[in-house]
Image 1 (cartoon, protein in one colour):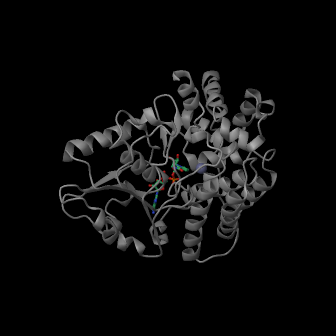
Image 2: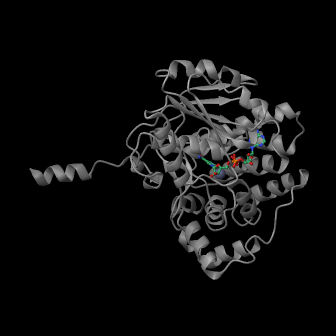
Image 3: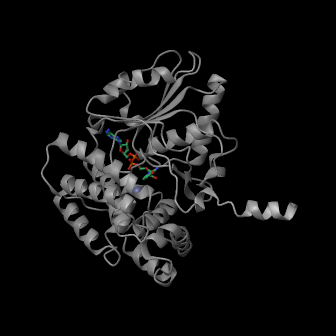
Length: 375
Ligand code: NAD
Ligand code: ZN
């Protein structure tokens, strides 16, 4: 009897290995220029009581800017300004959670992230860690979170990462850069107000926008592609081409890129990213190079894998007169280069999507070193 029971349990598939993934989507989204002003009304029914605040995690680029005044704080709500100069870290998440619990002694009613991928990911991670014990680093991986998060809202102020729709929050931990991928990570509410992306510096607009473009290229050229991902990826790619190669008014461009980001994020939800992301993770881990620019630095040398995508990318670079920095990997020690390669090669699902099951016959440490050396 006992033995039978054990076998039966072993045959139950884990969530990650389900043949047809049953993944969550953002259940509520408000879209439109000026829609940010509806946030107060949206939050009101989610307030548990006057002592359970809404905590707004806001990119400190908005310090002393009109947007701060428009944040609908009441009762004991708190605005915490956070720098996005560095990508989110597990210890930063742990510290924020500790502070929020110490300040209020009870769970807040909600966490609202206002900013780019950095702030959106921080908000997701803090919301998760308020209800889950231990350190955020314990949950980096797939489906390790068991308790639903505190209500959390994402308000993007720069477009491209798709972090507003994804079921992950990418964190730099003590021994790896990896997302907390779980059904509870996804936002409960997103506010898409294209006006909030006004004022993004041009280079940053390009780098974060290219994250979206690269999501599309990697998804559409991957072996995991299916009609679901393709439908979102193609729409997103069309929008990226309109934004970065066409002529648009500033307003049109902001609206289109915001929707491109959304669709790009949806496209990779049911497939995977590829070579540029795997290698960019290595750059990020060893040198702290940020996600958007890191993807661009790698992608320019990936003709072999994505010939058409790289050619379009170069046209976009040229049109917007963006000069990518060079010599980034020039002074790497052998040990650093090895770590970079190990981190990149550790992203097995990304390589498998890009090159199929036998990816290890194509991607060798020597090959990756030769690409990194060009950067
Ligand atoms: P970011 O959030 O780091 O912001 C980039 C810069 O733009 C910052 O200096 C910020 O202050 C500035 N900025 C943002 N909005 C602005 C505005 N309206 N006006 C002026 N300046 C503004 O950049 P990002 O590229 O959006 O995000 C990168 C992060 O997203 C990385 O940490 C990456 O790991 C993560 N990411 C997450 C996912 C996911 O699915 N969770 C996907 C891709 C990337
Ligand atoms: Zn990305």
